[in-house]
Image 1: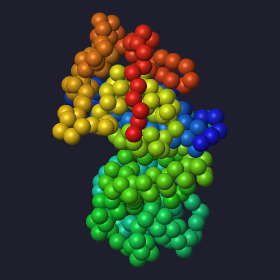
Image 2 (image 1 turned 90 degrees about the vertical axis):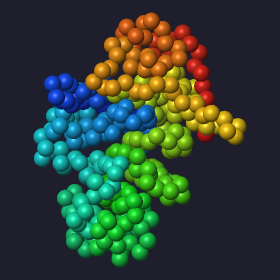
Image 3 (image 1 turned 60 degrees about the vertical axis):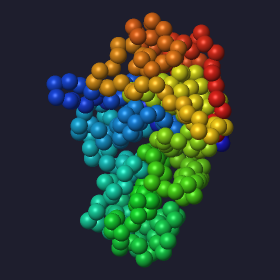
Image 4 (image 1 turned 45 degrees about the vertical axis):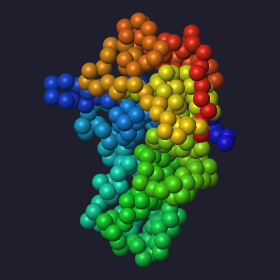
Length: 333
């Protein structure tokens, strides 16, 4: 897939902190990446690594509860510098988000058809009848059977997977140019998951819509994304093309994630897991956050934090060992 190389989204040194009592919790630290029109970027990492907070901070959804620093430039406009009325004109119309949990994101007191049409009313010039037709079209597009008859149904009348599809329909209804997808297929079975991902990719291709996809499934990343950024303890620790990162990962954490995917495993064999647990964000070590779990750590890893350095061809990794150790690769499933 080829894209316009000019970035439409540029995130630079994004940091997000939240007050926790008298302490400050660093949820995201110095995250930087860019996204070109039609490009799909995957964000992967364990729970608590900062993926969802990164997505929400792009739209300013976390600034009511914490402090955001850095810059998020959308077509040259710094979103973090906008006031709420100006930012609301961007949300939904130009940048849309699919939230991870549809039961909390959907309004339980409003029919799903109204929730789609009110988004269209806010962001388009469509007439009432055109908004209704568009709502039916979107529900049908995401695989809701008898879409016209489901407009007056409430969220509790849909299954978990159906509610997720409604969320996707709301996000895509106004034709955004950037889609932030926070695990959009978690509640769906494999067949519907493939259909939804194909739909998102088709829209990205047809309308030059950039997509940032948060997922735990490296198979989904391998099949749908152009580039991947691996996050750990609030930082991007490795970034590059999907082909390069999944075939020859540089960072020990990425290598651990790849080894955790079962491939040609004998029956009753013990599956590989990364030893230990992620550090608490209130008690991060002074050096590399992955150092306590790293199989190739050295003294310098505990003393200072490695920068996210370039290794050519768009590859970046934050590891002191990358320059002196051959990449230990694995092939994605």
